[in-house]
Amino acid sequence: MEFTAQQISQLINGEIEGNPQAIVRDVSKIEEGKPETLTFLANPKYAPYIYTTEASVVIVNKAFSPEQPIKATLIKVDDAYQALAKLLQMYQASLPRKTGIEQPSFINASAQMGDFVYVGAFSYIGENVKIGNNVQIYPQVYVGDNVEIKDNTIIYPGAKIYKGCKIGANCVIHSGAVIGSDGFGFAPDASGRFEKIPQIGIVIIEDDVEVGSNTTLDRGTMGATLIRKGVKLDNLIMIAHNVEVGENTVMAAQCGIAGSTKIGKNVMFGGQVGIAGHLKIADGVKAAAQTGVGGNIKEDGMVIMGSPAFQAMQYNKAYVVFRNLPDLKNRIEKLEKAIAANTGKI
Image 1 (spheres, rainbow, N blue to C red):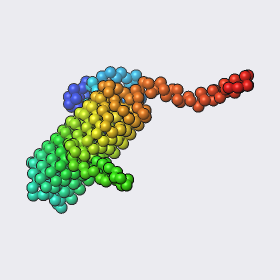
Image 2 (image 1 turned 90 degrees about the vertical axis):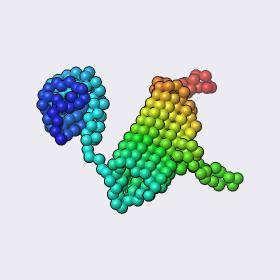
Image 3 (image 1 turned 180 degrees about the horizontal axis):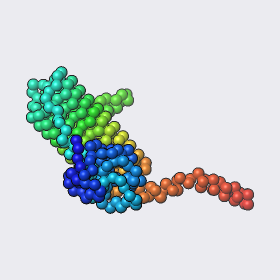
Image 4 (image 1 turned 90 degrees about the horizontal axis):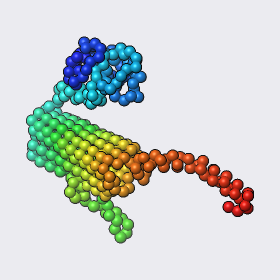
């Protein structure tokens, strides 16, 4: 595919500085830019590369002001990262979609299939499954009995969706994800032997949710584990039974959420954040990577870090102190020796 800078600027409502007829045939990272490619600059850390990149067209924020001449044509927009995302979404939407049923695959006779559905080879569709229009189910996917999958959702190879779970429209479930596996429920008897507590609930995923590769969403003990609209989950995340994740919350890789915790909307978790069970996390909370939360977070928009977690500004002040603890210890020992030398006692 071939576009000019002028055509691209019209798609993203940008302002051109440079040659409006500059040709774009591909995309590239700004530090690895090649002629006839499009790149972008959003993070100031990469600003030096804009003066050396070989890319023909660069999307930049309107606030960007060059400090020296730039060879590339610039397209200035309000938000360079969002503009690039819009372009890539347009490109992806233009690609042909797979349709039809590949063989060998198994689809139970009771399953209801929408229009323009794709089912890849070696996939299994169980009893009373309901699949909406334009759903794409790639090879080796397991869809258990009574599962519902709404329009335009994509299930990538090897994902497993256990019985009774419900997935909304426009969702993306990546390879190796497991939706609806048993929650970790066991009760010790008098002898100390653990008896399994049957997990009879389901997982409900609302519209516009993305679930990363090898992420696991456990079914509720009773009722539902609930992933609200617009949630984005990275790879290798564990969501335990009866957790509720609020709208437009995002989690980076290796987060773990213990059972029955309720997470608010617009929450952001960095990598390896751990949340204990039966807690409530307020709306808009931001947790830095490797934060460990053992109590309720009641204040909307609070920024937390550390383990155990506390307010980020307080953590940074405390860090200055405990980073210097070895030096403080040495100073105290010297003072004790000096006092003992002068008084004969400490």
